[in-house]
Length: 261
Image 1 (tube, helix red, strand yellow):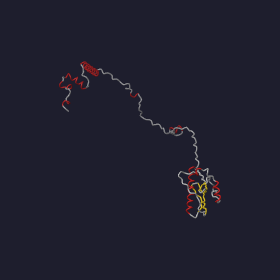
Image 2 (cartoon, helix red, strand yellow):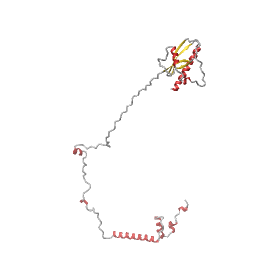
Image 3 (cartoon, one colour):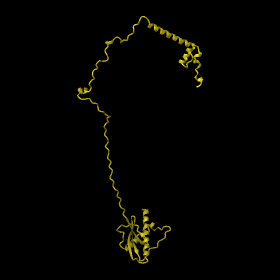
Image 4 (spheres, one colour):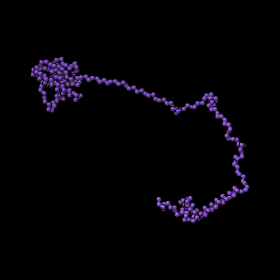
């Protein structure tokens, strides 16, 4: 720090002031920040000091006078032994509290049991038991198969429109087959007789040679059972062609039934 910061303010420098100014300097030290005392304030301070000195002098004169004053007594002073002592010389024994309850009431004292919040009894509804029915497997009745007779009409294989019962599935002889095929009306069945666009007519079934024997059988597609009688010839090629035509007729009929069912 520089010398200027360490130097004292000129107002507090005692070497440069007269002794009469020491009083104002002392006031500045005791109460810093106050404005300097005016002449009126200084006169008031001097008067208070003179009054203080007079009071001290009067007090000292009274204490040093030859007529001693009677000292004041407290109101309790001099009573001495006339007042009873608050502290007993012999302390009585404590009361026996343990046997007090049993001697007076005939039973030992007990603490009351802890009692919680008493709930009001309300009847609760009886839960209703829910009984679930036992699991029973669902019985699906079997689908009865339907029998169809495949006949030869005008050189083509034709499926009868009315399904036959199992007893009527097989005809008794070849003559019955021809009679039933003649009795069936094909004019009402437009869908079966309709010719598709671009279809090629299959050659009629003509027996070049008399058949050697007839083979009866059934062809099942789903729930549809088709019964037929296929003639066998000496030429196996002819029998094969007739079998393929028979299968094609049965398949077309099955597809038509499943689409419109």
